[in-house]
Length: 123
Image 1 (cartoon, rainbow, N blue to C red):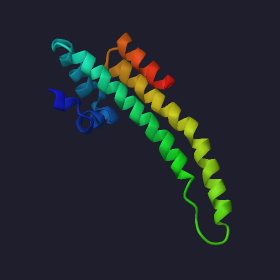
Image 2 (image 1 turned 90 degrees about the vertical axis):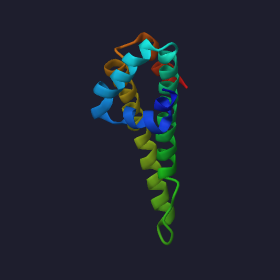
Image 3 (image 1 turned 180 degrees about the vertical axis):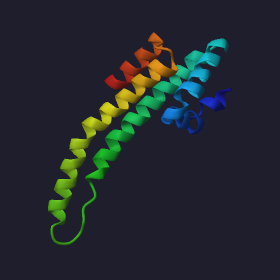
Image 4 (image 1 turned 60 degrees about the vertical axis):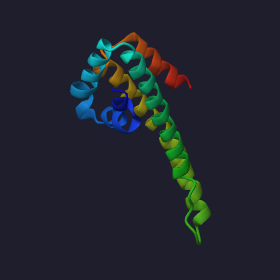
């Protein structure tokens, strides 16, 4: 069962809105039946949240790092950097919303998963 929680499998489930209720919720229900299942799922979910948050920060920071060569390259680079900084907050809010929806819809509003979301957001 641990291979189900491997990032290459679990993250695809958590990223796919159409699979949250049928598949992720089922995984949560099955995890409650296995000794240590919920703890393992909770740890994997926390790692997922941290990685997705870091991806948002890194992609938005990198998005403005590349500059076009030639005339106007520096101005373009500054504009891209500013645009990337402006996108980071909405993208982080979207990530937060996604984690909260997973916690509510897939994990049955389980308080322990709510704590995971809060901890991820505070990091």
